[in-house]
Length: 568
Image: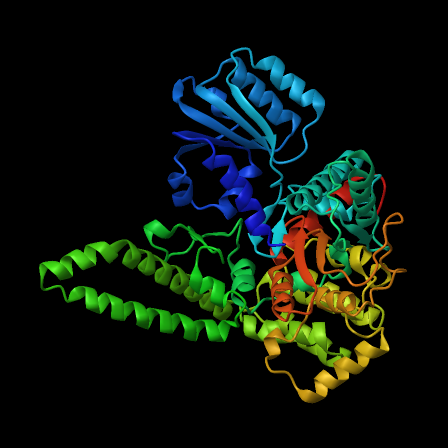
């Protein structure tokens, strides 16, 4: 169930069957879907000479009848209107319409009515309605992700938009994989339950014919869970390559914006970090920061050897060889400077923000007991001038999640200290987090202190010692995957929808996190899949979070909840 190849296959089919010069017309969502699956040079090889956005094509009156328009769009009413406007006064010679999800009959009729000049050659549904970031990790880039934290009464249509987009994305994924899943969800989450029921209704009732693939093998499992069951993972600093880049600099659709970085060269204002397009990144994306430094040094040494041999040009044959190898040399040069720039910038931030000090306390809060020592460590960091505002806020949030019941008095003291030390802090944000994701709201054993087995496991880990103090935390998702493999995921906590139960252990599991995934979790999935337990996991979410994004969603939800008459 490699999601990247599912998306690539659709784009391949779209482009290779239409010969001649093409313009690719996309919308704000499909531009992400295409950009992570296909590089610009690959588009050029398929004779795509122009990429335009659907909302702006009609603004240009310039005719280009020699170009064939390949439109790949989400089937929204806005996109249908843009197309109708374009078909009424077509700029291009032919139109090939591909939609990333199911079209309604009414939409097809509207398009047919608008095609007076008969320029539309075909209309097809190609189910690539998800952003395939890595082989086993996809996102839906949902714009108003914070809606999942709000009760339905506050903004019914906003929540419905979020649910519709998630159901569409999940449906498209299973249509692309030609499978129909058994569906389970986290019982304590209203939004997970709603999405699970709406997905089941679509797959088993409304469009049951479309999803009936008549395959004999075991159905895959779709498990829908809520981000608020593990609010700790998106709040932690990260120390493995991909997760760390996202936490400290930011990754959007496998691209990193380096414009704000002084050391970035002119041609590296935006760089691609993709396991499909960069062999060094593929090998190192899950490695620890310390090892990355060593591996980059090795890559720089290899490059210097190549550069040295290129300086030694004496004959015409040498020159011809250099010219022949130049594109490869240039690519290697770009790759080396990209990774050196990223690691240099991250090292600078680690030093400036004293992240090793901060992270040690974070990991202690996430993984070990000891409330008195934790309170002292957090207090000291709140008064440390080098610690940034966001790091102070995260430390108090982690302490609150861990010790909300044990030490309410100390918690109030920390709230007061945070308010006095952090200018930007919005009062009540930590309390809002506890209302959203406190111990009474969670299903899983987040800190390993509810279940006897987990308590024993944590004690054993404490006695053995930890290989790396900065990466000792394991996301709750890891435990969930273990429970699925061992058949221990309790029906009472994660009920099935309808009577579509699963016999035996599933071979393919898609876990969807409403509210967003993290790269720490996608690393957990990749490592789990590498062990070959007979169960293959794929992770999806509404967005990909780092701590900044998680806190921003929290602030936005708090703002809406406050301004609403219904108090959360």
